[in-house]
Amino acid sequence: MEVIIRDSMVHLTQGDITKMDVDAIVNAANTSLLGGGGVDGAIHRAGGRAILEECMSIRSRQGGCAVGEAVVTTGGNMKCRLVIHTVGPVWNGGVYDEEEKLRNCYRSSLRQAELNEVTSIAFPNISTGIYNYPKDLACRIAFDEVSKYLLNNESNIKRIVFVCFDKENFALYKKELEKV
Ligand code: AR6
Image (tube, rainbow, N blue to C red):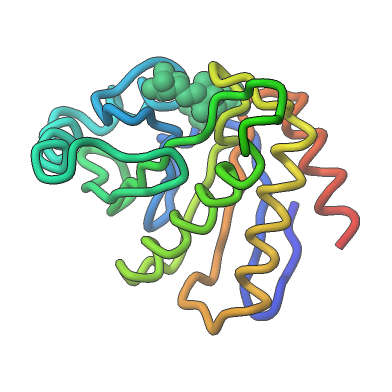
């Protein structure tokens, strides 16, 4: 399923982001950048040691990655050229600026993508697993930020894929895309 915004394609799929044939995939990492469970664990397993090594050298340079920021490594053994690691907020009832932090994840990731001449990018549903962000709210934010970005920028990114792992997220994104 896909829609066109300005001159870019926004695509929805269900599956494993590590298998995506795109220029860059986004990781829902943590501030340590040392890997973890969920999509982060899957990306480190599929991409191999090179990703962890680059993460460790970023850590020694800048001490990890702050919530809402993004850093870039190789895609290692995966098809993608790059992994953009961003750190989503932990949901704490919505009164700790979680919305702005999650919006920043999408903005920072797109900024890093543009800086690295990415032409296609896949996003997971950041923060909606272990970090417990309500899926419906997170879906609206993701779609809103990506749409605004494409409408307001002359972008090199011609394909953006939302990769949903679970049925619930897929159904929410489908509804959102159908509104376009
Ligand atoms: N491909 C695509 N999406 C996936 C995959 C996959 N292979 N595996 C899980 N998801 P989560 P968070 C979905 O928990 O909530 C890690 O330990 C999953 O269904 O991976 O941002 C980090 O190190 C969910 O919708 O990330 C952090 O400590 C979405 O990815 C913490 O978890 C995000 O779930 C980050 O938590």
